[in-house]
View 1 (cartoon, rainbow, N blue to C red):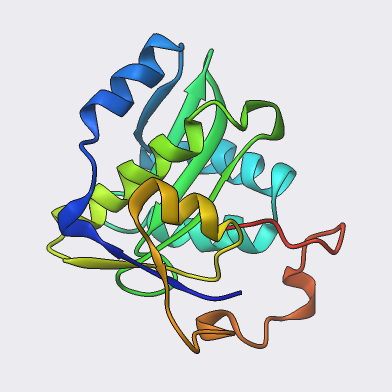
View 2: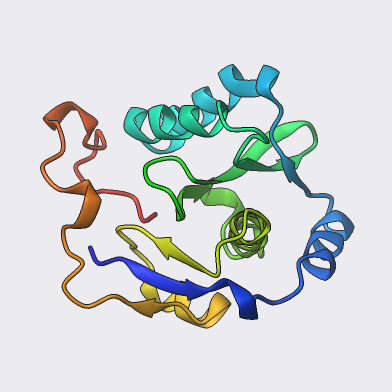
Length: 168
C-alpha cells in the first residue's frame, strides 16, 4: 500500500466538523494518558495488536497524539499521528457499526490539525487503504514509489487475525 502526502496548509477548518459530531452525540477529543488501556482494548478488538502497540507511542508524546471518537462513554474510533515516524498520520480506525457517519473524517482532520500545530507544512499518511477517501477528504495525493514504505517486512504476528489488513 502506498503512502500519501497532505498539504497541511490547506486543511479544512476543524471546529465545524467537531461541532457536527457533537450534534450527532459523538465527542471527538484528544485522548488522556490514563485512558490507554481501554483504548488499546478497542484497537485490539476491532483492528490489530500491532496498531495498539503503534498508538501506545502516541501516549508518550506531549501532548498525546491520539484522538478518540466517543459515543455514550464508549470508544467508537481513534486516530493517531507522530507514532511510527515523524510527520506521519496513522493508524486510524472506526468501529464497523459507526462507519459512514463522518467519524473517520473528523478523526482524520483532528490528527492532521495536530500535525499542523506542531509546525509541519505537509503530512504523510502511511500505507493507505482507502486512498479515494483521503484524496476527497483532505486532497491527499499518492507518493510515487512509496510501497512498501516504512511498513516493509512486518513480523508475522502483527498481521490481522482474519488475514485481511484493515485500511489505515
